[in-house]
Length: 202
Image (cartoon, rainbow, N blue to C red; front, side, top):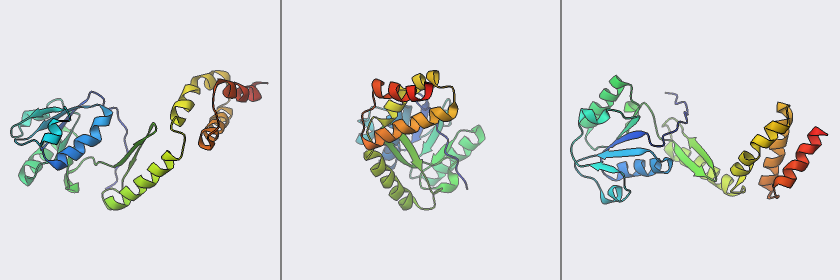
């Protein structure tokens, strides 16, 4: 199965996690930095989840729990419950991730990197999580060796450069030069950007 890496805004979107153990905890922890509205449903919910401040409902899963959900994570230790949730989500076209059961997933969790303004998802389509983790560690090392504010710097001057330079190729050249400056640790400020722009407008 081939998984396309969609990037969607989940801030304040409703996400259901069914299950209250350590597996569910790991999924909730991955989602929280993106500020979704998470509801955890399970008869037993570990203190670590409760302490995260997400909404918790201590009872068995009910079909109506799916109403209004953007997606669902099924993380129970009951295969029948997981199967039931997967079937319902498939019928309702709600993306579902059944933990440790790739055949009952319509989306999967990548090895996730969120560092210095960059978010990257790495997956082997479930074939080798250990390899995905290895690549994740390499990406983290790469990002840690680049100025922490690189994304913010390039974003800060984006509008100015677009307004000043009509040629798309020249804009790419300028952004590449600024990127190289950031990577090399050079100072990128208003004066430096203005100087570069003048080279292309004289």
